[in-house]
Length: 415
Image (cartoon, rainbow, N blue to C red; front, side, top):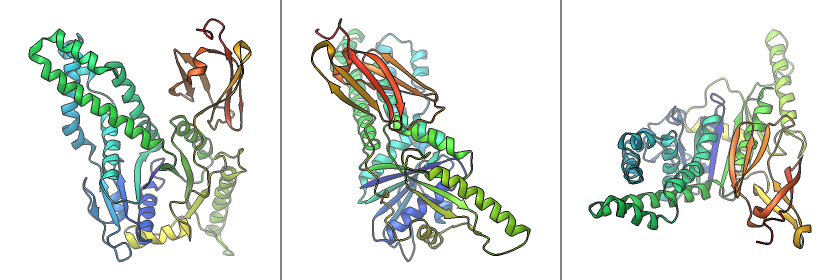
């Protein structure tokens, strides 16, 4: 099964392109599910069919039986599953000495709706015979936050209720009195299941052979730098991008004359220049050589399966929509090379991030983790065991990302 996540700035047409991709897959004889996590749902409008939180079949002569669609209702998920989980969290916090009012406030976590929406996508992906699950995500900024949530929530749970929760469970239950042991057991089991679920969600998102993102944009000059920052942010989260779709190119004016034709030629020339900057050459372009597909602006909105299939024909031609253009699976965020014996060993920690020349980059050591901050987005990454006893001696940025050189710390190396 493949999972494709479509995202981009609001209004660039990501919902339409996600729906067109799913329709094309179904027309090719594959079982496809298209699901929207965008709070401002418009997937039903694009498909021209009513949708609910449960997958339903999309009628169409060319996709009969192959296309299913759903719109995640995050509010209902919060009213259901999250309500029960909050009760368990309050139990743990109260046992740790946090007052009832404070415990209530601490369990109102920002991002709960988005996390549950992503969790529902995982559940739907596992529940059906899909060959592909196409996800219509929210705008780019919301999607970046969404993809970071599983790891953030997992860190929150680890600090609140560590992996050795059975020991903590017994301690808290003992402090609270034997009459509440069953409550502690229920809370421990629920939080344990959540931790495992977050791990599975994170594993799915970072599995480059299964999951990838397609960025949708309109060819305008301001998008080049923003696209590069988005690629960096996704790489920082370990999420693979397999391509870009430039939507709404104005049609060529051909040999027509007049003010309208002149406007079309000028606008198309500007868009072609942006596309040339985006494509560039591998390693130097804003997209590091990622494939760029294009779609021309249409006079009529592509609504309904027939119109979406027509759009998909332009988007993919004879190519497989699941094909990533022959690109290699994403490089791991961290890789280590070098070595040696004793204190003269030298290691290179490679951080595979596409960085622009004006990127605001900061690295910091936090115990056994490396805090990587790029343009305001931060991620804590566990250092490989050998490097936890090393000190940084230098760093440099190149086309492949950031290279950090380290040597053993004499005070720690032999311990």
